Image (tube, rainbow, N blue to C red; front, side, top):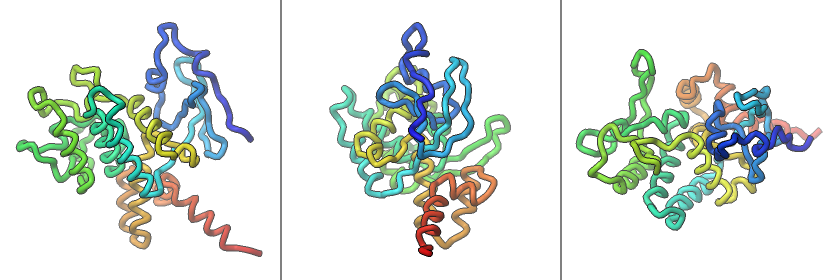
Length: 270
């Protein structure tokens, strides 16, 4: 069955000609794709959940994104962000995107969580990067967990914060600041475009890797389990970080279950 084209973006474009970014903001997660011809599509090789009807009247198919499984591709993504100074008048935005990517790949948290971070969430009172970020429940403010910041994150955030204007930087300043000003963070549609452009530029899209904002979250889990294949502690800890109900759900989420299933079938030649 060929890829299913659900609807054409231009057909439902609002009268004020909102951009694709604004349309993407309506999505419940980042697993919807808009291709370069402005057509919303669900790739045929991905398992899909039932369609969802949005307020705009557009029916969209839910499509899973992939982790980045090759460390060489992760390094290529980092280099892409660091070497694209010509993309913006303010080259610090490249460092911002680099820091976002590195943090997202190393903390197993949702994009919405990461984009809500302020300076005080990641820095101590003396301006140094914290060893960990404390997460609290929205209503009760109870501590729901910690994310420990490894050397890669420490380096990326230190490099990024060095580009921020110290005269306007306060503990309440948003970490991943938008160009729109007024202490506004980049939103999920901007994060999606950052990831999509990276995937196209370094060849992930050409390889068939479906890139979205949850790609980083899945990449963390994939490599955590691949680096520690015989330690059940890691799958249980990761399951808690993802708030999954079973190890099988986590293995499927990060793309390991499919790999193991393929090995099983390929091991039998009758």
